[in-house]
Amino acid sequence: MAVTRRTSRDIRSESRLDVLHALLAAGEASRGDLAAETGLSNATVATVVSDLLEGGIVTEARRTGGRIGRPTTTLRLNGNRGRIVGVDVAETYVRATVFDSALDELASAEVATDEHHDEYDYVIDGIVRALDASLENAHADRDDVLGVGISLPGGMQRWTEVSVVVPNAPWLHVDRLRERIGLPMVVDNPLKAIATAELWFGAGRRHKSMITVNLGTGVGAGIVLEGTILRGAQNGAGEWGHSLLALDGRGCRCGRKGCVEAYVGAAGIQQTLAAIAPEHPLASVPMQREFIGALAAALEPPAHPALTETLELTARYLGSAIADLCAIVNPEMITLTGWTAWALGDHLIPAVRRRVLEEAPGDSAADLAIEVSTVRGNSVATGIATIALERFLGDVGLVTTRVPTAI
Image 1 (cartoon, helix red, strand yellow):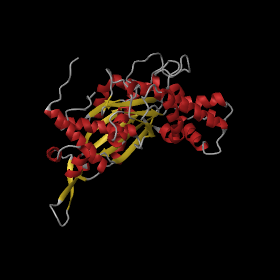
Image 2 (cartoon, rainbow, N blue to C red):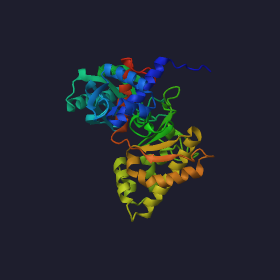
Image 3 (cartoon, rainbow, N blue to C red):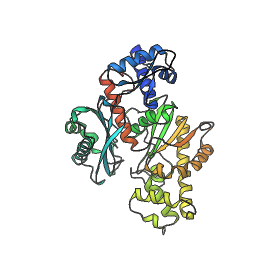
Image 4 (cartoon, one colour):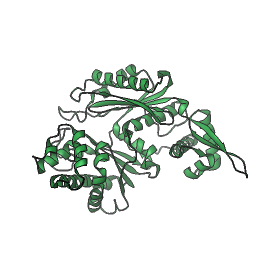
C-alpha cells in the first residue's frame, strides 16, 4: 500500500490549522500562549502567525505589558476578512447562517420546504432564497462572501422507491446549484459538517478520535480518527443510522428492516411509545419536533410509566448501537448532538453509558466518555461554514492538508 509522504509544506499547513484552532478556542492569545497550547516551538508559532497576519486571517488585538520585560501583543481571528455562509438543507427546511471570518454568527434566515418534494429546482430555489435572505439580514454584500458551504443530506443511491434521505436530487445537479449560487461553494453532507463543528468548537479540541452521533429525524455518526474526519471511498462514511440493530425488525424509511434509525430516530421513539401505550396522547402527536419536546417536558417527575419505559428502551437501543461503534472505531469520546439529543440527552446518557459498558467487547469502551455536545445552535450550519472557511484557506494557499475537495 502506498504511503502518502508529508512534506514540509504540509507540516507548516498543519501548524497553521493548529494555531487557528487554539486561537479560536481562546478568543485572544499571545504568541507564547499559542506555543504553550499547541506544543509548537516559539519559532514555529512566530512563522505561522506571520503567514496568517499577511493573509489577513489573524489580526493584532492589543498590547499588554508590565513593569518588567517587553510588551506582549495579543492576537485574534480577523472577523472583518469577509463573510462565510453555512447552509443546512434538511427534510423540512433550508436554513442559511452568515458568519464573520472569525466564525461568529451574524444573522440567519430559514425557508420552510415540503419534505414530499425533492425535485432539484424546488430544493435549489429554497437554498438560493435562504442564502439571499440571510445576507440581507446580515447587511452583507455578496462581494464580501469568501465562501458558501452547503450541507446536503443524501448523496446515496436509492435502495428502493423511497429515498434514504430527502432531498436527494440536488446531489445530481451540483453544477446547476453552483450556477444559481454564483459564489465560491463547497458541498458536503451533514455528518461531515457536525464532525467538523465538533473538531473546531467542541470535544475535538481535546480528543483525536471521537464520534459525534446526530439524533433527529435521521440518525448518523460523524467519525473522527486521529484528528481526521473519516469520509470513505465515496464520502458516505457515517451512515450508522442505516446499520442493522434488529434482524427483521422495524421498517426503516430507507427500505431496510431493523435499522438503528428506526429505533432511535424521532419517529422510532414515538413508535416505541405507541407500542407500549397506544392510547397515550403523545403517541399520536403529528409533528416530530413537537413530540420530542413534549416527551422531554413530560419526563419531569412524576413521569407516566409508559414514558419512563419508552426512555429506558430508547437508551437500551442507543447504547447497543453505540457499543457496535465502539467495537469498530474504539473512540475516546462520543458526543450526542441534534434536536433530539438536546431535548432528551440528559435523560438518556446515564442508561446509555451503562448499556455501552455492558455490551462493548473487551475494553473498547473502558475509558469512553459520552456527553451531550457543547456545540449548540445549528451545528450543521456551523460545521459546513467551517468547511467553507477551510476551503478558502486552501484557495489562498495557507492550508494544503485537511482541505475538503470542492464538489
